[in-house]
Length: 354
Ligand code: DNO
Ligand code: MN
Image 1 (tube, rainbow, N blue to C red):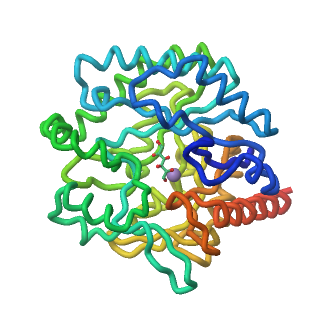
Image 2 (image 1 turned 180 degrees about the vertical axis):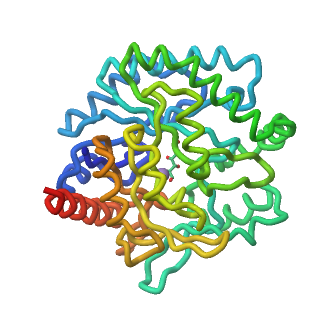
Image 3 (image 1 turned 45 degrees about the vertical axis):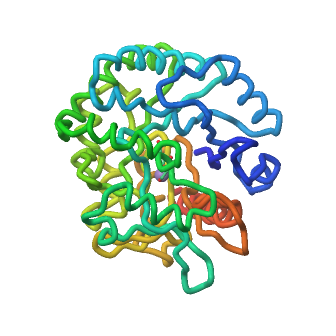
């Protein structure tokens, strides 16, 4: 396993590569070209520059999060073929600098969604929280206004001010898209890019939907064990795999993460390990430790080792602690604590299995 840390780039991240390098046993970063709109090809120049910058600081860049999928691909419009060609070019260019895994998601319109980015916890820290009741009956525009009131200059992915203008139009395009259509469009996309992935030895690792249920009437399909099994079965190539995000799947009380790990087995290439406290359509993120939330991180790490997991791990969203001001979920301190905890768990489980 390789312990990594997500990095948004020099311009967009409050955390530096030098700081990441000092977290014990974090050997790589998981970056992306966040300024490029979904659908555009990642040119070799840009990929090379990102690689040079990261490796110059002594860190690896073998896993990318995310190469975003254009909405036309998810909706299944005829224009998708053009965007798929661009996607293949990005895969080819990333493979040239040694990228092995691409994390992406297939959520319509929005990525992870929360109702509060600064929920106070009893220890004085803040965390991200989702309250299903607050979303019920609301339009994205209503939600946007509320989130914007407490956003502190940061937006959730897909909730940027400039994007709100196109939201109505996007919803219109999605109005007849069912969950079955989304499945068919995902299959079409994966089948189209698999030959490139095989040729370049780059594995695709889908990120589950977060939260793992439909929001604002938009279908969401990567939500549970059945869905993961279906995903792996409809395109059986080993280049079609999973990012196991414990906090995303774990937000639903119906999901048993250990069972999902056992079922996905050696098709898990990337793991986002974090804890959540859940209670019926409500969840908030917590410190990574098992006793902080609803998930048993020890059992999760053990299951990963039992299926022979040999991919990339990163701590996922952290709380905001010690007065840090950073992108919600992506500060340095709590994620560094998370990485240390996960490293300790990993070592303990590994040695006890010998
Ligand atoms: C939340 C994050 C996600 C992830 C994207 C990948 O759990 O890990 O926002 O980065 O969905 O495309
Ligand atoms: Mn995640």
